[in-house]
Structures are given as C-alpha cells and as structure tokens.
Length: 146
Image (cartoon, rainbow, N blue to C red; front, side, top):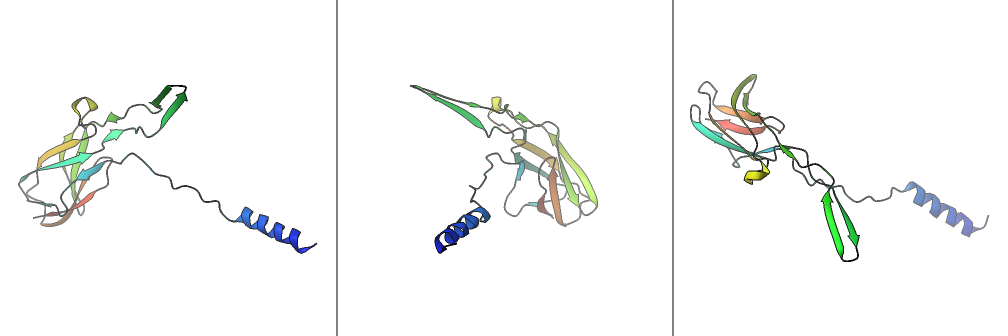
C-alpha cells in the first residue's frame, strides 16, 4: 500500500474511534425545593414560616411548533403540571423526626403554581444544634435550631 491510502485509513479509523461531541442536555423544569435564608436559624417553641417552590407533578418542557406560510403555532406536547397536595414538612434531627405542617401547592389560577407555604411551631423538645427541614419530593435543607 502506498502512504496515501494508509493515511486515509488512519484518519477514517481515528474519526470512527473518537467520540462525536454531543450538545449538553439541559432541563428546563426545577425539582421541588425549599426557599430559605442563607443561614436559616429557627427558635425552639417559636412560630416559623417556610416556603417551597416547584411542588408540581409534571413538567411542560417540550413543545412542538409548526411553520407554514404566514402561519406559525406552538403547542406543548406535555399535559399541564398539577400542583401537589398534602405536602408534609418535617424537622429531622438525628434519629428524631417531627411532622411540622401539611400544605397544598398553589395553582395556576391563583398565580402561585407549585408554591407551598408551611406555618408551624418548632417543637420545644428539639435540641439546639444542626437539623434538617425535609419536605415531600424535595431534598432536605440544613438548618440550625436555637
């Protein structure tokens, strides 16, 4: 074989082995989360309010669009998200758990789609120190009990 076909074969083999770059995937819908101050501190026996966002079932992150002469339209392919109901907020400290409050997420009708607000009295028997607030469907958040 002459050098040209060998070079061509090497280039083709290299292209077949090298991974083809793929665009990064991105998600457009947030998972449920608690909205707290940077360093949340809750007082034992005191009343507190905690807010949550994105507490919905479903996500409208895909859309199909049709284009025509002078006529464009886009529609969601996914069903509308449904607000979650009976979302429980708990205080977790070591092996102990306290059920603080239960609330329903807001709806699109009240412009509070997926927003949850819990108002509760922090248990007086919680120990001062680190703890977590845990809501159904969301990652727990570190807090400090005082």
